[in-house]
Image 1: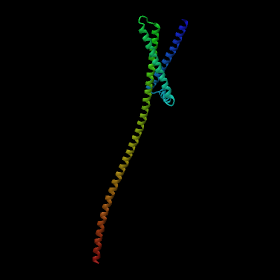
Image 2 (image 1 turned 135 degrees about the vertical axis):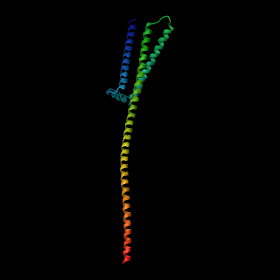
Image 3 (image 1 turned 60 degrees about the vertical axis):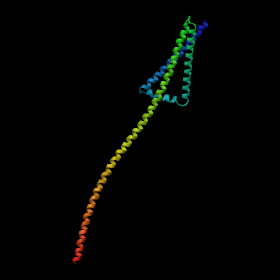
Length: 202
């Protein structure tokens, strides 16, 4: 009897440590999710650390931990199923130890499921924040290219205006020179006529 009590106490201590660890993990994951919501230095630190985790050996470790949590969840669900089946078989007697174990396994399974769910949420949030940063950078480069294009367009329009004004000035000069040329031609013709008249007079 004393040996059984010692074993139950040992199991209780192990389960308690496991539950404390799961609560700590959930708390840390919730803090990470909260840090994603607000633009703080902590958010940049979390993003940088997640970037490092997703490089090199990080994904293998994360997948191993996730697989371990899934196995623990399946184990807790299986133990719940066994206890439930045992209580259904013995309809008359309800064992209080089984009830305590069942509630403990339910709590453990729900915490494990919550840990896995929060880790998936963190992974998706990190992925979307990285995509958003890439999109913002591409938008900024597109905006700067658009600004430089508009500046070049404005410079080109100013240059075009200056060229048009220069062309108009040159056209007016050409017309003026043509007019002067016609006047000089008419003067030369009249002078030639006078010269011929003088020649005939001599």
